[in-house]
Image (tube, helix red, strand yellow):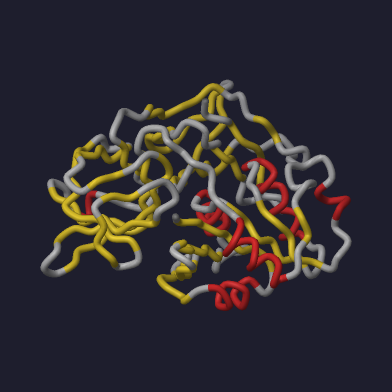
Length: 293
């Protein structure tokens, strides 16, 4: 079993280090460990609050959130708004009084735990939801490895992937074959939901795949625009027309025009995952969401 944890707030790096070994780092940092047969993948949004994509990507990859609050500020408020829109499960580590800020949100029922109790829960009790639908994989890195060829790193969101599977990369709609699969640098014949994987592929080169691409066994809907049916955050000013959309690991500019949300480039839609809209020029950057059914 694999679990994916996102750690937010001041002190997040120390908390991550106490549970796992630091791995790759760019806008977000990955930490990896194992405990009694459970593979632990921890995401820490290193470049947040400067870069909102770091937070969005870390949350889209996570099954559970640990939110460390040691003071109330604008960043805490922004993270609460985004977590509420995403409907994430999680817990708090805090001695602050912050309940007025989570009242009437999906975070209102999160437990407040000590650091040690939060670690115990993650390692011994938490199990991610089974997602047995068709195979969906979110890709966050791609590169060439001498002697192996093109390699993709990502997360199995749903279904399973096996060696020799044929997958389709979206939104470009190009097929590829899986030559081998690794989890924590160990070759495996297949991978399951919540597994972080390295896929050696053929038929496509790594430069043809980029962060945000989605691999699937079946078809995904590709759109350039959507009807404006956004659920606004209660804190949004509702006057934004030029925004950035985040969906899974995809991010792109979009504009609201004539009752439609128009994207700068094609967007691959994953059912059950919301599209989050943000105005990067606002103090409160989170605008709202559109659920994909």
